[in-house]
Image 1 (cartoon, one colour):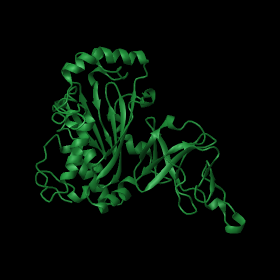
Image 2 (cartoon, rainbow, N blue to C red; image 1 turned 120 degrees about the horizontal axis):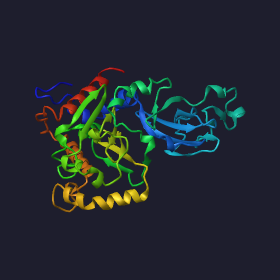
Image 3 (cartoon, helix red, strand yellow; image 1 turned 180 degrees about the vertical axis):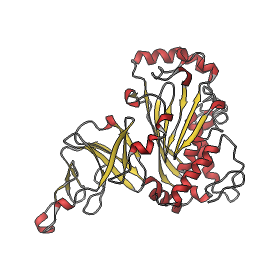
Image 4 (cartoon, helix red, strand yellow; image 1 turned 90 degrees about the vertical axis):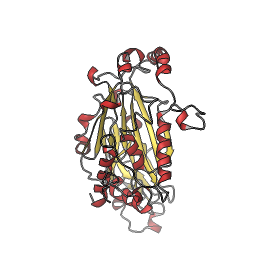
Length: 386
C-alpha cells in the first residue's frame, strides 16, 4: 500500500479485486467491529430472533423468557450446523435441524437425542452456545462476535454529536422505505461513493440538487465519517410548504439539511429534513455487495403525508429530473433516481478495475479527501490485528 503523489491511491487495486484481500478484511475488520442487526421493534417478545452476518460469523439475537436480549454464534456445538434462519420466532427452545440437539433461549444445551447410548458421560453444561455481544444504540440492535466486546458507546461516542439531533426510535418505519440491492461492486467502492462530496453536484445534478453541495461540512471522527450539508436556497425558502413528506421535528432551523454519516465499516445513515434511513452494506465477494435500506419518517397521520405529497408535486416536477434523456428501463442515468445513478457508477468503476489499462487519475483536493481518508482507515485496520 502506498500513497500516489497526487493523493491516490492509498490502497492498491488488489484491495478491490482480490479474494485474499477480501478474506483478510472479513477477519480483520468485519469480525472485529460492531455490526448492525436490526431495530428494537424487530424483537419484542420471547422466542423472537434475528440473525446477521458479522464478518466470518453468523450471529443471532434472541429474546429469552426473561425478556432479555442475548446474542449467540449461530453454530450448533455438535457439528457446527447453522441453527436458525434469518429471522422468525421459536417457542421455547432452539433445535438444530441436523441431529436435533436442543438449546433453551438462554443458550444452554438441554437435550441430546439418544444421549446415554451415543454420548455417554457428556456434560451438557459445557456445550452451550458460544456467546456474542448485543447492545442497543439509537434504537438499533448491534452485535459483536466477542462475548466481552468493547463498549458500543465508546465505539460510536465520538461521532454521535455529529449526527442529526433527533431520536430514530421516535419515528415510524415505512414498508415503502425498504429496499434491497445486489450491487456488482466491492464494498469499499460503495462506501467511497457514499462519502465522495465531489460527485454530488455532477452525477446527481438533477436528482439531489435540493441540497447545497458547496457548503458541505465533513470530517472523519476516528474511523467514522461525519457529513452535513444545508438545503439549497430555492428549497430552503419554501421547505415547510413544499417538503414531499412532513418534516422531522427537533431540527434547529439553521441546521435543516442532510446529515449523511458513514459508520465504520459499512453503515450509512441518511438523516434528512423529512426521513431517516439506514444504508447497510454487507460484503459478499470482492466484486459484489448487498445494500439494504430501511427508512423511518415522522410519526404523522396518513393524511399529513398525502397532503404534503399533493402540495409539493408541481414544485418537484419543476426542480427534479433525470440527468439524461432516454429509456429509464434501460439506462439508469435516465431514471431520475439517485440510488440507481450511484449503483451504475459503482458497477462501472468495478468493471474498469479488471482492465490492464486502469490506473488512478488525480484526486480532487477537497471533495475526494474523504475517499483518501477512508482508504487510510482501512489500511490501518489491515496492517495490524486490532
